[in-house]
Amino acid sequence: MSISRQIKAFILRNLASKKPNDFDIHKAKSVLFLRYDRIGDMVITTPVFRELKLTYPRIKITVLASTANQDVLTNNPYIDNIVTNHKNNLLDDLPSLLKLRKQKFDVCVEFDHSVIPHAILRLKIIKPKKVISVKKDGRYDVDGSELSLYDFYTERQDNAHFRDIWLATLKPFGVKPKSNDYDLFITDTQQKQAQDFIKQYSSKFLVGINLEGAVKGKKIKFPELWKICQGLYKANNNIQIIILTTPGNIRNINEKVTEISLDYVVTSYKTNTILDAAALISQLDLIITPDTSIVHIASAFNKPVVTIHENNQDSYQLFSPTSNLNKTVFSPKKDALEGYDVQKVIEYSNQFIKDISS
Image (cartoon, rainbow, N blue to C red; front, side, top):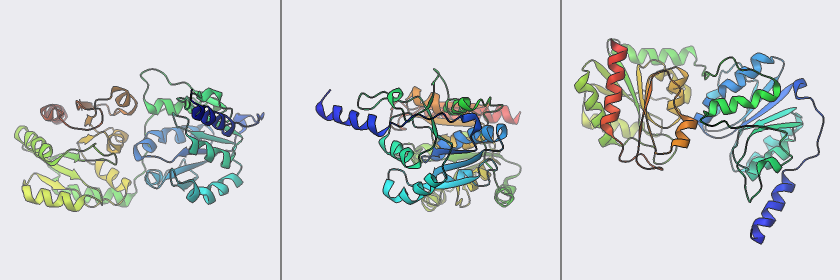
């Protein structure tokens, strides 16, 4: 190991050290969860909050969320407080982290699967009595188990999904989860907006197609989209295809849909939050999407889903859809959705439409 790596390893071991304490985790009254990353990760984590709260109603649950995923927790009755974090910007977050430190949390749960210095610094600033984490990959030849900052590690079982890996962080509390279903709490207003929109298509089989997510390269391009739409309509002329939009892409998609002029293809109304989109998804019959948060939102409502995934079996195992009816088409590339079998997407979708409609 180089001198540079030795120095980094020395700093890391010292940074992630703490004096032991004899606090009994079963007496915890306050728990902070660190989940300041992506929308899909937050959706998958929602059963963790619910199962802890149902087992220990006395525990006050706070979640340190990101600006991107905080809306997932809106109206969630199992969360007492949401604090917004700006990932990788420790300086901007310092005031809120110091406020969290003053709350003197009994336990902090974090879900990083690698040893990440900025996450360690956040934990050091917050200074909870006990820290629970998932088993970590090492860094600078330092194994996660060497770091005394973490009091409990959960093992990562082979072929496990992230929802079960993250639910395992409740084992030190003695929690035995009764359900691993995801939670999304839609308002009556959001539900009515979705229902009013689809009312005009009440006699149709409703297919929602999501084109993209936050990660670059995970995208259904327009030439593939039109092939999918035409392939579905050719086999099922009683369908209505709704292209899901975001505030950032609605204008471009509207222009493309108007240009192609297929009466069985329309764009969704403007969805300003992820729960607006979730409300619409809850009213649809089938979802087609790249590997993005929409997979997990569809799974939250147990909607049949056809996903398009990069050629990464490890990632797929961890983030796969959990709907009862789901199929996945894999791209030949590991980092982009290019060259995938469009006919397979059409075939799987048409089979679901046939099965559901019969």
